[in-house]
Each structure stands twice: as C-alpha cells, then as structure tokens.
Length: 211
Image (cartoon, rainbow, N blue to C red; front, top):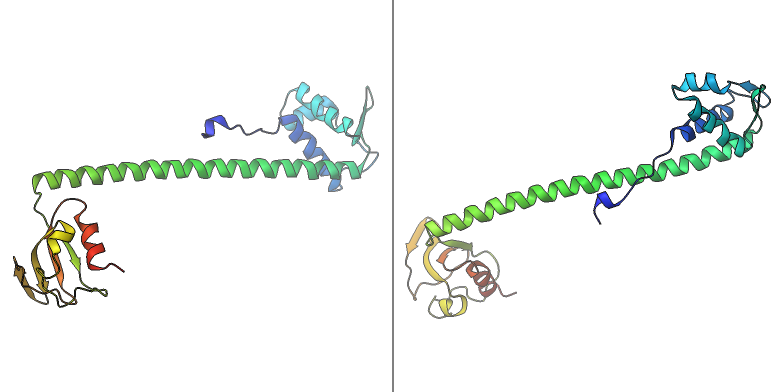
C-alpha cells in the first residue's frame, strides 16, 4: 500500500487549545474555581477565530474540566479530569508522531530504492555496451580456497567440459602464462583468466570450489 492511500489524522486546532488549557490546570497555573478568559479573549490569545475558541471551551465543558456560563465566563472545575484528558491527548499525539516518522522512513526508503534502481540500470547498461564492444575481455578468479583440483592439469579436470569457459591465461606470482594449454596445472594463489558467457564466472566458481 502506498503512502497516498494512508491518512494521518491530525489534531484539530480547537483540541490543541483545549489540551493547552488543561495542561495549565495540571501545572497549577489555573486553580480550581478560578475564572479564565472569555471566548473572545481566548480567541485573541491563541490567534484563532471565536468559533475555534468556542469549540475548545466546549470540549473542556463536555469533559467537565471547566464550567462555562453565559455572562459569567469560564470557571476551572476539575484537576483530575484535566489530567486524564492530557494523558489521552498525549497518547494520541504519540501515535500520530510514530505514524509520521514511519511514513517519512518509508518515503526515504522509496527514494533510496529508486536511486539504487537507477544506478543498477546504468551499471547493467554500461556492462552490456562494454561486452558488446569487446566480448573477449576475460573474467578472473583467484585460487585461494580449498579446491579438489589443486596440482591437476586443465585437461585432466575437463575444465571446458564442466564450465563452458576457456582458460586464456594463468598468473603465477610474477609470471603470466598466456594460452596455458591442457597440460598446465592449477596451483594455490594462481589467478585464472578465462572467457565465456555471462554465466561462466558462477559456473567456474562452483566447479573449482564445490564446497
């Protein structure tokens, strides 16, 4: 499922204002029985419309955190209910934050995958062009592991028959043996140069190092 199909539910402005007022009650900035701003003053303080301020007070009143009466302003009513509201609000905000971080991580991964795909396509394209220009560029493999064919000749092990690849050179120390022929042996630390199709390297690796 793509990110565009998933929606993050954002907290309405009036709920954030209600939560801020509840936080001030919990912090002791407002005490029980104290009157706070009228709706118009609240709207001005938070830079919102009077309707948004009215909704914030309505939330607090519905939760019995404050009591609002016409002409008497808003009176703080309950510390405990303010604390409960804040806990629920923060829990929801935490879930939203995790959602946001998760989607941002997915977006970053998608960007990295697209970048990796582009680089891979460029590499494949250049490799194919290079091979088409010069199909005789050899592969090479170094004899480092335990191979059952050490000290055996190329003809003895039927190298071409098992790998469909042709050995064109062997580097042994400072010496490079060109076109070694069927009687050349394979020794530890040799670098074997061979030509073949794109599957040759894997076949040669599996043949020389079956374990």
